[in-house]
Length: 395
Image (cartoon, rainbow, N blue to C red):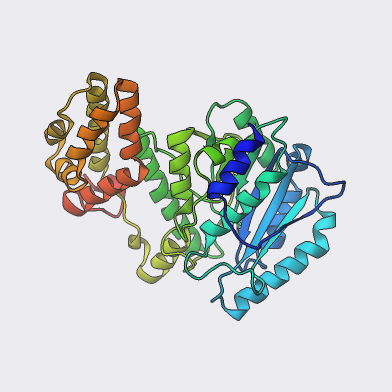
């Protein structure tokens, strides 16, 4: 990859701000083959355990990776949250010399450097880390690997090596990494997090069954990509929640998504209200309303999705004009959803703009992407097939 493309990306789509990346190395500063980017918002209590797990992974330093912490909070953060970041900065600064890997620190919390209240959050923090690390990569000799991790997550020995091995043998530009949340502090917490994991997996299994190209997990602490793919897909987005979902969706459209084998990351099962949805919010909801706060999608949603994708593939190959009419033969609810989405005119436009079955098929999946797939499943759940306590009880 040419460095000119990196600087072109940074000029057009890179994040702007007065932040700086400070790097602590045991040896003279050099260019890196990749890096792990970790946003940390009031995570002082979690950092030592994370560092312990990183130090235990000899493949991290062996492969020339740097670990970059983006210590962040918004302007309106609580004093206790700001103090946690102060403690984390002092801890990392005082101990980085004993770490087995190079450490980068970005201060995005001190007065004048805080994230803005409007769009400050984990998405912007991830973007700062990724964008500011790009100029320190060895593009002349490799396509560096960018790995996303969270401060409340721990890794296994061999983690970095497994990810690099994956990209050495995969054509895809992006990848997801297997995860399993740590056991909870109580039996109840463990039960809740396993239920949430079952919900996440059942959805991905449903998408895979249906043949969706978006059948993969979207967990911010368990994703990675080539630097070239990061730039080609437009980089990380600034969303305060769901940034991982939309980033992986973009990667899937541009460069493809693979699945890493041979390692597992272990996020925290804690309850958290920092974001409006996701693991932390789901755990809080179960503490408040019991396990049935998490309901499963009826498998019939995936039956309809599978039939829809098969018909769409057939019609794309024939370049036929009647895809919406074909949808009625699958389900009136599917057709209603597509009408609401304005699909008829969109399909007409696709047929005009794309002159080969391959181009048309790609355009279809770029439109009927992970977000619209999820919207369809939600629509079917709200109209035809209500969610239920377990997937086995739906039909």
